[in-house]
Amino acid sequence: MTEAYCVKCKAKREMKDAKEVAMKGKGGVQRRAMTGLCPTCGTKMFRILGAKKA
Image 1 (cartoon, one colour):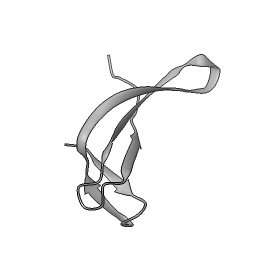
Image 2 (tube, rainbow, N blue to C red; image 1 turned 45 degrees about the horizontal axis):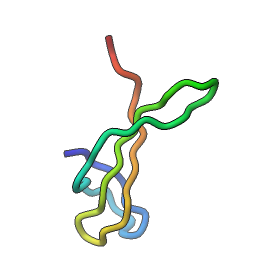
Image 3 (cartoon, rainbow, N blue to C red; image 1 turned 120 degrees about the horizontal axis):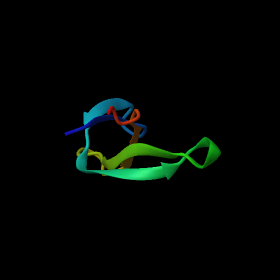
């Protein structure tokens, strides 16, 4: 599971139902990110990931 910061709880927590998504970046490049839910309050959580290593 992926750890992310919950803005509502103001704490780092493990994401529930985490999945990888692609978002728009500068210059038309796609950025990787993880999105999921906070297990405590149910708020949507988001974490931007680094580039894939070859």
